[in-house]
Length: 85
View 1 (cartoon, rainbow, N blue to C red):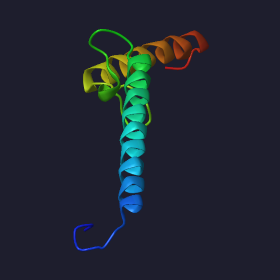
View 2 (cartoon, one colour):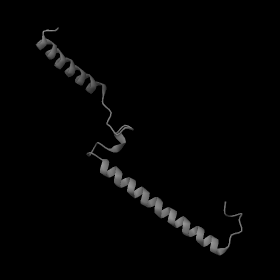
View 3 (cartoon, rainbow, N blue to C red):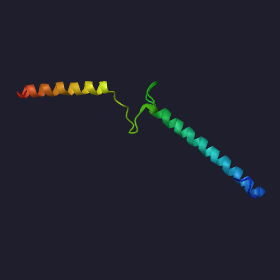
View 4 (cartoon, rainbow, N blue to C red):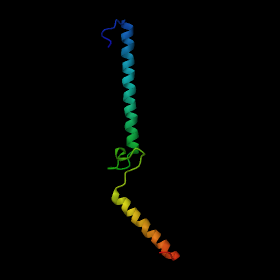
């Protein structure tokens, strides 16, 4: 891209300086992202990558089934106490 252009030494120095600044900013961004991931890491095996896009951990079908069964049992007790079956 730059090879075919006729640039002055001053322009080349400015381009080199801009490239260095861009690399420094990129490194700083990667550091910040790495720190954010470290903060969001909950435990040894529970990292950010395992979370869904909404930030929640996915629930297995078995877990959902256990929760639903518990809810049905609780409602059955409520209905039994009211005399409805």
